[in-house]
Image (tube, rainbow, N blue to C red; front, side, top):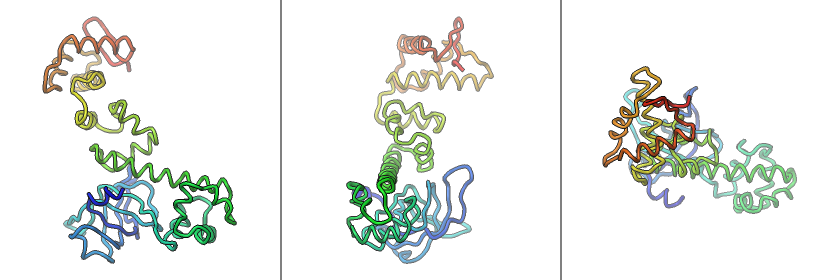
Length: 290
């Protein structure tokens, strides 16, 4: 994470207010109090507030965030910080840790219990929650179940933050990353690695294909299968038909390759999809199963 901090411009502080949030997605507009930055353009805003825009999951005004992005100028609202990605800043002093634990993120932990935990473990509290959460149950007001819930929530946040950063690096937007994490959870990155095209209901096919081609051959069978199904759907939508001629589909497929797509490769993959029941054959035409 420190390497990531060094590579990207960021501001650190806390969210003071959410002014607007979309009813259909994670997009939000709010006010942010900046305490630290590595961006020369943001130096004049340290210890001041600035408007921000971006896609966020759950927002908690009692904890600190690291926002990665850039300064922009809105024609109506003036200077704003456009957020590309973000993460929760792990507290590193006892006062901040108390506020963090009692922020509402950890169910059943209020200010009194948080103070007792920090009095016992000091600045090692976060490490204890991560690596020895059973010790928390020895604190008055805590139970083993509460301690386990705190551990699970903390680790879930870390996993989600790492996933957002990884998905950003692949080419997904923060909004797409949050939507995918919300829907697929911890299995998301396995899905991305095994067959990214299964995400087509959430992300446009063309974008998934561009991401896939960054590290894979255009003749990979996983891609050819996905392209066949995508192009059948595309041609049907364009013509209003439910059937596509095999020859017509092959011509459309060839447009998706910089190199050569051989007819025997195309027919072999087509036969596999028919055998697997994903495509229905009707004489010289084919259709999607649905």
